[in-house]
Length: 439
Ligand code: BJ8
Image 1 (cartoon, protein in one colour):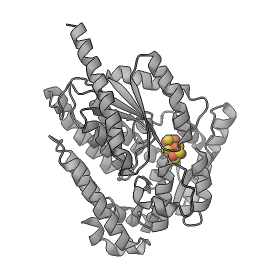
Image 2 (tube, protein in one colour):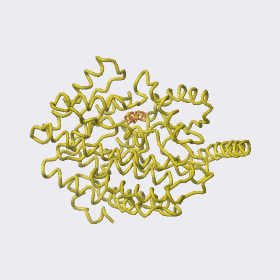
Image 3 (tube, protein in one colour):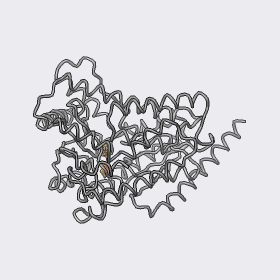
Image 4 (cartoon, protein in one colour):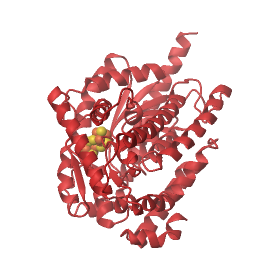
């Protein structure tokens, strides 16, 4: 197993090696139980199974080998990080551990109980020193998207350097101007880490790499959802592949996702499904799913439904837009194009955020889905409040939607399953009634 072999390296980055090995053991057990027994999995999932076994082993070796060459390592909890700049500098940009309940009690020694579990989990990983990604980071990228995050950075910074980027909460001209300056400042910060000026060509190359990665992820999303009569991969596997995109080397990852998609293309052509095709097909909307948060997907797919995409930051919100490199001649052009792309992110931290609702309705129609689950992490006020506007608009369109608020504890799993089951039953009934009507 990866972590045992790489003990020396892991201890050199300040990990609590014993505790970490124990947590990894539990994590791998959970993965095996929840993933490996799924029927008829695509062959291409083998790479992602391997990645899981090396997620805190071989991958740590790769990131730290780059650091030894003064290439930056940046950890983040948000998709506003301009990763094109980090990758352009030859470095690694990745999501930090923040999806486990096992670190929350430690976090609560410094943070209040009633804030979102993602923030507490991530903070707890730093206090416990049990995330190799956090330990490897030259700095943690923080942003001002929500109240809980922006105040946590001040505390987290006592334990690990944090660079905070001011993300506006409106998208007026003056807000966008400030945002562009923040992207430039981020680039300067990366140059401080590497001790080297980043050229325009390097930034363009970083952008090409990330554009290709996003394209591959969108291809997977399309294969999962746009063919209503076939389910070539489970929603849980689809989610996991997307989650790996936030940890893996982007070039290798793109290649592996495209290989998986080639296989899924064939499955779609030959109508090879992992589930019976009359299962209700659901879109999941809302807050991100950090590894190992597979709770909702497990609930849906063990009660007779299938998740066909995630309208989430670990999902479509991350890969729906790319940076347009046309006519980029100067550094200022580059900053503008990065801003243009990042300003399309429709996070609930913005007001107004109407584009998100319109997009959801369009996605639903394009995929001929049967229903939505609006999922929010507990105490995420922006997504929780926005649920009212989104569900109201969905109702007007006749789109069934179940709202679920949850944290990382396993305690509400039974309750979630019961609610999902009842929702799926009503969708199945509707589907059958429609089929009967169309006869
Ligand atoms: S762009 S969704 S990754 S901020 S941490 S806002 S869940 S209370 S993660 Fe997010 Fe960036 Fe927006 Fe996406 Fe709520 Fe929790 Fe805050 Fe969160």
